[in-house]
Length: 301
Image 1 (spheres, rainbow, N blue to C red):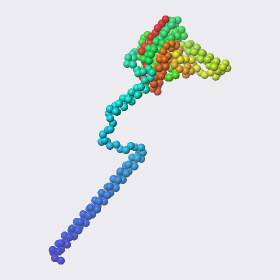
Image 2: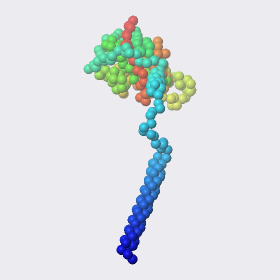
Image 3: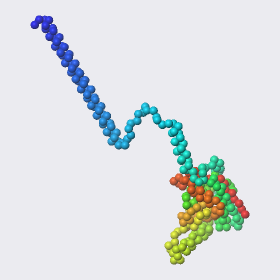
Image 4: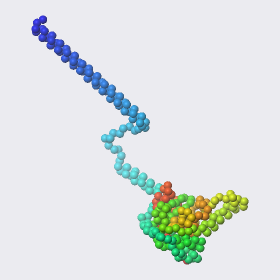
């Protein structure tokens, strides 16, 4: 073989090696690409399965770049409508709370008032509320200390602006706490006067005896003796009267045997009491729309 031929053979061999190396590189690259594709596929499938395992009801993914389709005007209108519905549901027969309710300026006293009323005189108390007027005939003869307390607090402006903090349909409406929580009062307490409550209790018992028979004394229900229209003091136990009172609106047997001082009777405005207790309330029985006392005026004759 000549030197020239030998050179050609070497060149051909080198060319074959270059082709072989190139082919091997191409095959390796194809294998790498195929492996990556397979791994990506498994990754996507696995992620989807994991997502379903976490929340079977999960919604499809949202494109964060997609423009919102809501109409702002429509959304505002929907919000306004929702608020209006909520306000309507909160407002009962008394309507929304007026803007001119007096500011509460109730004082706190060190001790009960001295007796300044005439127990033989007739007294009327007019509760001017944001729902209407309630006129109460006060029983000064049966409860002189309690009537004296109400008269003096009223004339001192104590009740102005105070809200009905607890109302129960078919039962009663309670008011007289300047804090609006049911735990407040005038700063003092005074004793019970249960004469009138005991009379009412006895009357209810007598009615039950007549209905059930003369031999039914042991089987009598335990009535309360606070019939519709009765005005009595709320308390936290014996001899803890202060400024809180309630208007009985429903079943007198919902209260226990005489434990609350009865000192008056509604003679006008029971329809107002009915409207107040019909107010929508929160879980604590407080009206959602405040019903307040504007003032309490006293008339003596």
